[in-house]
Length: 217
Ligand code: TYD
Figure 1 (cartoon, rainbow, N blue to C red):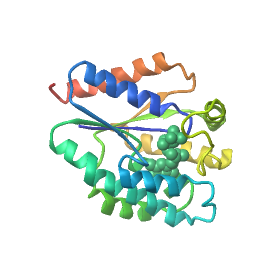
Figure 2: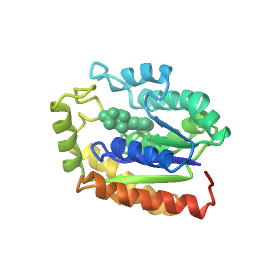
Figure 3: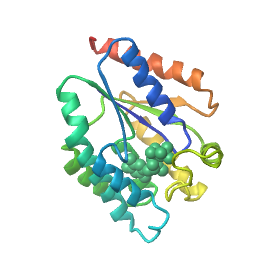
């Protein structure tokens, strides 16, 4: 089973995806937890290029292709082998991020981004996607607040630094995708930012999904 977490910047998906992966492990599932961009050594180098504020002249297509290259390595090295070995893979972001951030919000085009990502992933699709929904004002406020407290990546990156209108387009693109694929993409309201409440909603969805598919430990 391949489970992804998606959402606009500041939606809390890194915290929630990690908590969910820990819970699945705690109840006895074999889990691989990973992230994009930067789930592999090569991907971490791509992550630096794509998120660096010094690369302000990057073309939208170059940006889309860098995310796709990161993803190709991620599927080849981490996700593909783990799925084959029977693990549940939980990934913080996957192709839907590129649809929202590059195809729609940056106007690269759905067909173009889909073609690049079909090459990158061989057409791999998540079985379940949790979309943590937050409005851009709340999300970007949270990003700035947490980065001003000083984390490992203490600077607002090149994508986060885009204006609220851009982040609004990202959010709308995600909600439109969820409306088109309600079976796979489950929307969870993350505006409250209350970690335990959001986790319990996410957990109900994921556990319900695994039991409906008869996934054993
Ligand atoms: P993420 O690691 O979720 O951010 P953070 O570490 O700050 O929590 O993602 C990094 C940024 O990359 C984020 O702004 C979203 C962006 N992104 C895309 O634009 N397209 C993509 O395909 C992916 C995977 C991420």
